[in-house]
Length: 370
Image 1 (cartoon, rainbow, N blue to C red):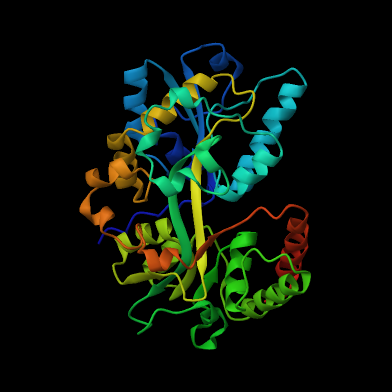
Image 2: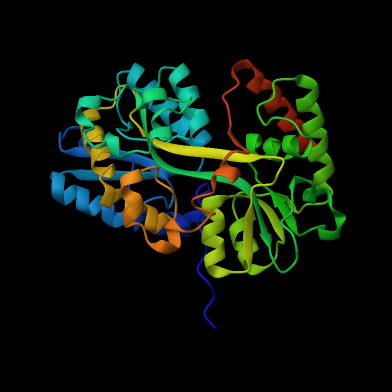
């Protein structure tokens, strides 16, 4: 029997030269942005999450708009922030060796990038298709009115689990249950890990109270003695292979894992869960800002948004695209959660100076013995 394909989730890190080589073949052009490419006006430099687009969309855009897309991937919002920082540093030194026209930050990083003046406002006169968005995605608190961003994909953070092991969906306290010791993981992302612990304590994932943050860190330290560890890299494969019975998971990742193991389920526990939106945005000083806006408007076409949604299996927030979706995507409650599930989700907020409390608490968690 042929082994199932290795899964690559929304936030999985590039793993070695083999993974990078595969990524290099995933789109018409996939490379760092160079001085030579920046000399041409018909170029778009696009920096996106790994495995987060139907490659044929880039081919179609190149053909229709007579442009060359230079496409590069990253593995986390933190990596995106580092790449933007390096590009900004090069610009201040009079060098433009690496820079980008289009990026896809998550909602909490949109707030962060806006606060640091790293995003350019969009020319709304060029976004003639923006009316296709669902109304609620035109009024999100992290960017009301879509002044800086347009949704690319949206989903939730909850628990992926083996339905043959759990007769009822688990909640966040499952990670303390020694019955499943060595068969569970929590995401290796600071705020996502704290999300799980804080909800298990009945607290907000965006608390600013130092004692509550400290209590959540203590809970994560307790969980370390039960779970396999913190894992954002291979948990999809381990869930699909049956090595894990429960894992904190992104909804889009769980859909991928479920394709290889239909016995997997996904739940946003009653205590609450995360909600996220990854959005198209243009960094300040982008050399081809107008080309980025052309692509954004292209993506807002119903047929293009539907093409990406069907390939990645996500909700694009494009209402006009919904009728064009494959029923297996449109009718999947993991991809399109019902209203009562969305009501118990919250976005991860950028907490400003309080972020340092989470940073310090996370370091304490990481240093604690398992």
